[in-house]
Length: 611
Image (tube, rainbow, N blue to C red; front, side, top):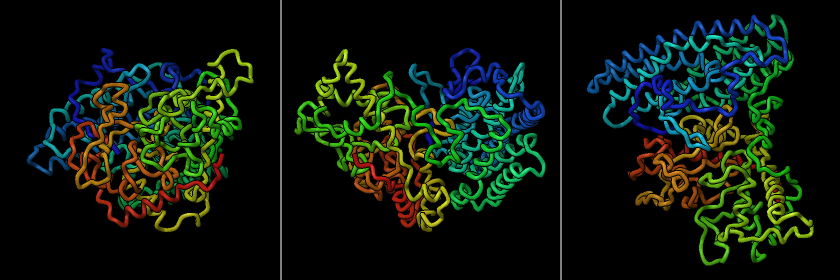
């Protein structure tokens, strides 16, 4: 679910040179990867493999640059009164995007800053902690402008095209004094495969153009070309990898249309086995490298319970706490100021760690808390905590709640006085560390859907499978609730938690909508693009975490689906200028919405979480 912004821009290339726009740093990518990739030397490199990858980029980069020039010409020729000229520009954009996908793995991995010029999301993404941000730019912005319902902004389109075209013309200059190893090249491909599975087949990059399947095919064909030097004829591993790679490409080539594509069949039948085979090949060739830290390359595939490493997400500055101790403390009412409330009061394990209330009572019992109680399940897989993301770590969140006069109003130092700690603050930190460790352990990934993804073909029925495919396709749910966690943790590097502006209403009576007055993240950082922005929660276990939204205003999943199907607050006719959810209706039928709801029920974990 993407933002639609009309952004007046100067040449991005010029702004980058003058420092007015800084390429957003990717925490998963060290500076040395751009400046001196050859520093990784734990294994002797294979010049043939590296040379082949570099040659492929040198061949494809000029073709992408040429497609940018053709796109620019098509945009210049647009006559707003001529639907044919607009259709032609959209087709040229699609071709340009296909060329980009051929060099995407190389460019996104080794040169993430320049890559943002071409394919960054069409919305503001501030980089914390300094809150530096860059204006939306590139092919995704061009798409949003070409499909905008208002007057065609030709001037803005040409400014975007000029920036992309001028930068693409200099792509090969990035290779000046550039070195790369086999380990890095292969890691770029395994990350690209995750990008294909989690973003491209869902339409994340081009939701209106709906070219994600063709783009995925181009990316896989690029992967095939770059993998050739690492394959051995008549070797079982090489043959297995090629078999699944060819099958994946064939499934995408037989595209029945974006909305009708069977994504679960693609994932389980070819993409996930391909991921397994690629990891095994890299391991057997002794060319492993992990510059990410969050992705676990030892996992079988992206849907394995250990695919992401919870202990590598942000944590406090204390020693690691004990999850067992945290489990006990979670139900300990002596942590509260009146001895009547524990963490489990609002985050009941029997209710999927929620309270199933629109908002819980304040500490004194005379009022209501400002926001709905979110589930704690999978909350360790985030970079920001609370609905507005006001703290970085679970430890900070625990301390904030313990001290909050409206929530726990506690004095935790009394609880552990027997430990003879040096200070009250140290005791509080120990408690927070233990509770945070317990919360980090709450990621069972044991739902019927998970069983299905791991090979149990009987775990889902036909309607649940259809709901999953709708969720990842036509309904565009997976463009905000990213796999495998179905929250706002953005693939493929999983290094950023996303916030969205939905135009959430005060109630679920959509025939007379009123916009929620809660400003969300804007109260912390007063940028217009944060007005009404809230963290994207997981929809795992969502059948048991009602009512929904930050204000608990939507009483059922049916109402949630109706809201999205109508285009959010803006689609309901409310004024939400910064809404990141497209305001155009999804045109889901009642049957399709019911199938999506059945799929969401299939995301309910069966593991006992009782504390």
